[in-house]
Amino acid sequence: MNAEGEPTSANEAVFMKSGDLPVEERIEVQGYDFNEGIDYEKILGSYIRTGFQATHFGRAVNEINSMLESRKVPLTEEQQDIYETDDFIRRKYGCTIFLGYTSNMASAGIRDIIRYLVEHKLVDCVVTTAGGVEEDLIKCLAPTFVGDFDLKGSLLRDRAINRIGNLLAPNDNYCRFEDWFIPILNELLAPPTTTTAGSKTGLFPSSTNCSKSRSPR
Image (cartoon, rainbow, N blue to C red):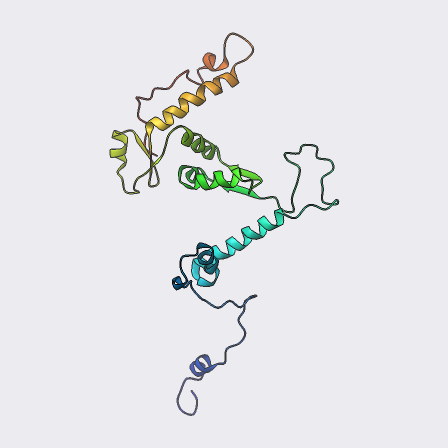
């Protein structure tokens, strides 16, 4: 306590003069002003100044833009790999971009964004799981639909519908995939004889029964 009977530590905490901000860059919080109209580039650009998770999103955007700019920089003679003869895997830019995704992202609409990135060569290498490849191929054969997280598994099972989060994939989707893919696997297993390894071991059936319901995911 001081002479006036006030806690000294409280006074020091409340009336202490502020020092420098412990950050590398001083950014003032400011949201987007919609009085300026709908400008999506400016809206996304304002995220880094918005705070909370929007700031993390803005930093991620800046990082990706930096990666894309680095890809425009040609390699110097010293950086070029003179021993790699395969042009497909030879390093070409100042930044090699890897894109990883999981199977649920392929099930969702994110798949179309990934397709765009690959189509326009905005990434150099795609890394995914076997499920990511499977869901991508299934989307080529049949659509997935928007459902709800709270749908009962028993109801979906009775209707032969699989649930992926709040997405719905009819059982027919997987049957179509199996009917298309299993013959390919059988062909890969076939030795140069009249008897195929698949039919001999029974490892892969020659056809699938779409009338049987799969358990909801």
